[in-house]
Length: 76
Image 1 (cartoon, rainbow, N blue to C red):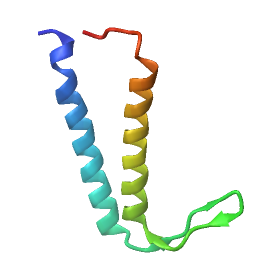
Image 2: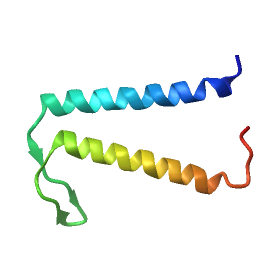
Image 3: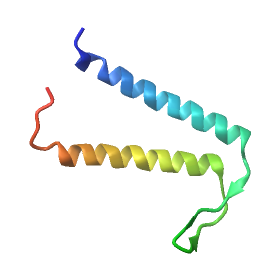
Image 4: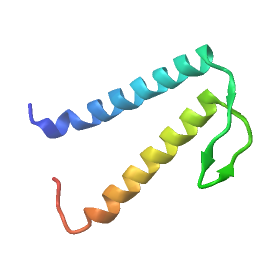
């Protein structure tokens, strides 16, 4: 079995593990946190919401970076 047929399964498994981990952490730790970056501070948000947003933005950013930097290559 070629590795290219396993890639969608592996990607789905990694995404599923992230969703379960975020759900567990957000249920166990519902205390609000405030993000601080370069002197700026955000409003207080639950940890689960911060994790979900950062994971989603990271996945979208990774997909966009992969599509931008692999234009000239053929992965088939």
